[in-house]
Image (cartoon, rainbow, N blue to C red; front, side):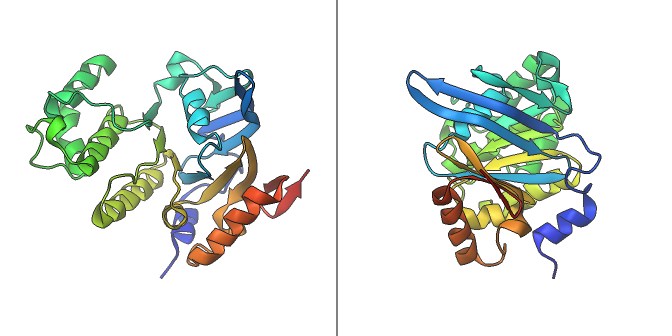
Length: 263
């Protein structure tokens, strides 16, 4: 049985070889008052691959995502999407689920999606297949406010996929999902990458990141201390090895790229 890494690598372009990153942050820094949240962040996520972003609470993951989506302006650095500088046009290629589900609780699941269809110019015909894809078949007419946390997460994923984006950013998508939902989410993320999309996922769950990711980045106090293939970081099938590698990365200082350490 092949590992997720082996499977993805056999179907995707070689990491960084002749392929522009779907999402690239270069030299991105951000502070809030005297608090430096990100320092010269360089991050590259590629089409056809899942990039897992790991970090302790307060490491800067959400800030990095908000900058990538244009919700925050960096103090320095730049963002590129599909090889082009950040703009409203390039942002149209990005779907995202961050900062928890943003839903209209009084509306049904289908009408929540219909609102987004009208805002984005997307055909309403996309709604039914999306509800099926995220596991919400049969509940399209139910009010989103009556949904469980896991169902709200699924609806948020459907919204992120509504415009058929080339780049997908998911912040802690496993939150609120039961074990079956986590497995289904993992399969969905892998399928989306295998279709050629760039998928960036953040999580505190090392095991889940290992099961779904091809490449990972580790943030520690606003700096990227590791970026590279998962296989160079730790054995994806050994959760204890993942934990040790993660702790070594966030406490060791310096920036590791693959197996190298850069001061």
